[in-house]
Image (cartoon, rainbow, N blue to C red):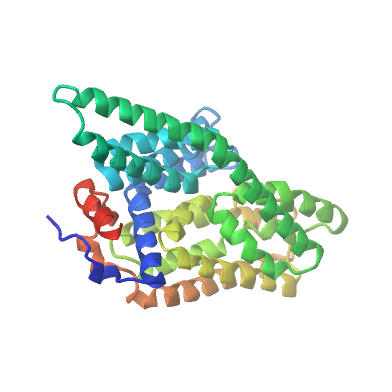
Length: 375
């Protein structure tokens, strides 16, 4: 059995707290990367604008990202805290979060899954010594059912309005920056919103309609490229490939193909959620790309959907390829350099902890020790 974390690994203070939170996020996402890649492949192939459009097979896309992936994350988060019982109630509670909003609730799952398992762990500790012999299974099942169901109701009622408020704030912020010609700064709002899976709300709800109005007048619009630029995501993934944790590197090439060639940007969001500081790399890359678009007068004739490099080529007006591709390449280069720096060029990727990191492997026996050590 691997040696669990001790206080000497994280120490104390704000930095240690951030490291601990990042470790828990990674532990919820890493075991499910394969599911993200499966969804990305299905999406890139079978949606109406994919490589092999198929209306029947494309029906898998919505349920997987809306239900399966968040539930898997909630299940894994609950398992980290309280083993199999925590996993079950974490999954149940995540369902409440999922049906409370139309936005994929990955962040909500990361919160409510472990929280529900932690509550059950406290209740189990209270009832263990007070339950008469022969009633253990009855008490355990009912306590899990009541807590899981109650947290599902809480997720349904409480998370949905919060997500809608976040979406509204992000949209209003992007509107303000567009109206005041501060487009490069839009990445400060767009990239974090994307990682929270609000990309479609920002792109199709705000930037798309504004871009259409501008394209009618000028024949093209830069607004189509603010959110859909595949460069920042490519740079982050390349930084992971070169300097990220060795445990993750084998999954990165497939993610690059899905993101850059297939245009499914959601595939790189989990990589940023595992190391949240990398959002700075995406923001820097996005702002740099927008600046290049502005300087070169680049624009697209319509929204690239999905946001792949091939869609960019198809939507670029005649004579505008230099500015469009330059913006994508600069965004990728800047996000790669900043991401590499944030990863310490391999020195801050966490490899020294990976062989013994139960949060990375998702093993409940050892992660319970982690939870106990960090409480």
